[in-house]
Image 1 (tube, rainbow, N blue to C red):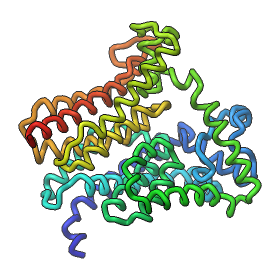
Image 2: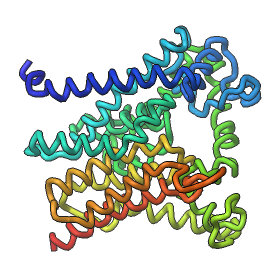
Image 3: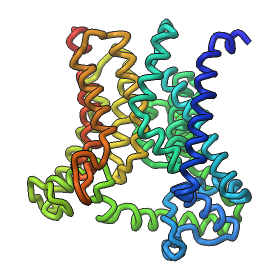
Image 4: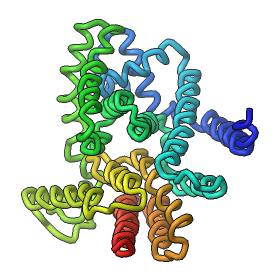
Length: 401
């Protein structure tokens, strides 16, 4: 009861926000046939009939986008297949909202010092919500699984901090099977042998789990079909170069390749040299999390922030909803600038500039078929955020010497 009294205002705000967001969802999404959630619901229906959920021709025939997740993810949606779609979509929305609250809470657990004031925490939560509002609403509207993956990954990191290694390994495996980009965190767990062992066993266990509900032969068929289907449907040139893809790879293809599908290319590199450039950029971005090393300043949270940005930028399929992972680095930078370095105006400038780039409307100042996505503004927003994080790292290195 004491905790409830202390947090009554937060709870009231959460309830009011849920009511507003749920009303918005119920008004908007039935008109759009529940967007990506309709794909999951359709897949659950096919699972119930033991149909091939990786048969692109069947999905195309019914004018449904492909389901691009492993059988475990399909199993999560299986119970919703027994319900009318509107009820199923409402339950999924409510579940996502709850998971998002946990994302904020677990991010705060990893970022805040023990003595951080309630006021500082609330301001950091508020800024994190504002800076990533576009991605939050996009995930709610589309019914995507990013919030589920994000919360599972944060839970793995929280469990690691609490020295619950078995729980951490299970959560990391679950997150990795939903979307593989969470495996960028795997090197942080390598020194914990128990975590790695549980992680490997959990991968096997989660891969076998659908068999207990759908049958061994059917599960084996789906497992064998998944990876070839994913490579064919998600790593084709169209997916990698389209303006909707805001990954660094897509940006480099658009700006530096001789086969750019848009008019913005400033270089004409062939496939070999472009591949070399992409590999070098990807390695550099990922290594920013580990080098140069800093022994102070809540080093783990800073490292996590770099990797969360990398998850958004390095994913070959960098759709807008995947940038919800920027919640953690935006919260970290907001907390740092509020609590540790309030006079760093350049730091605030970079954070706000990243926010502006990431929320810039797709059609503003443009005509016809053009979209600002062609110019990779969201990719640039992630790069600017990396710059803000590196600035924090370098400033602390200078101060500590």
